[in-house]
Image 1 (tube, rainbow, N blue to C red):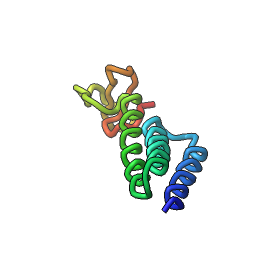
Image 2 (spheres, helix red, strand yellow; image 1 turned 90 degrees about the vertical axis):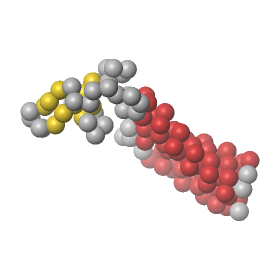
Image 3 (cartoon, rainbow, N blue to C red; image 1 turned 180 degrees about the vertical axis):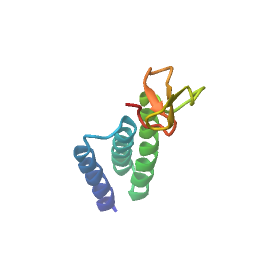
Image 4 (cartoon, rainbow, N blue to C red; image 1 turned 45 degrees about the vertical axis):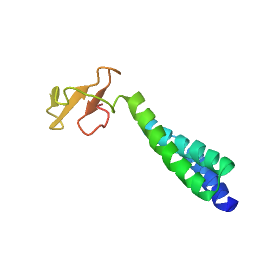
Length: 107
């Protein structure tokens, strides 16, 4: 039973070390999964490790997404039109960064 928790924690730590070009939301998801999985493995059994990893990944992704300025209330998603790409982009009022409508950063 403890082997699965150890395997999850080891795999997550390897994923954290291997991912250097991730967005903040992706890094938050991986970090949350590692912390949640490790806490679940320490304080419970394999099911607790899986549940902790899932909850940690969701929470970490959301916090990273908020730091990027892509999550939450965005009033006007079509502020500007880029004729080069034919796509609309907007400026997030909280972060001041520009994003396409699908959340990709605007160059």
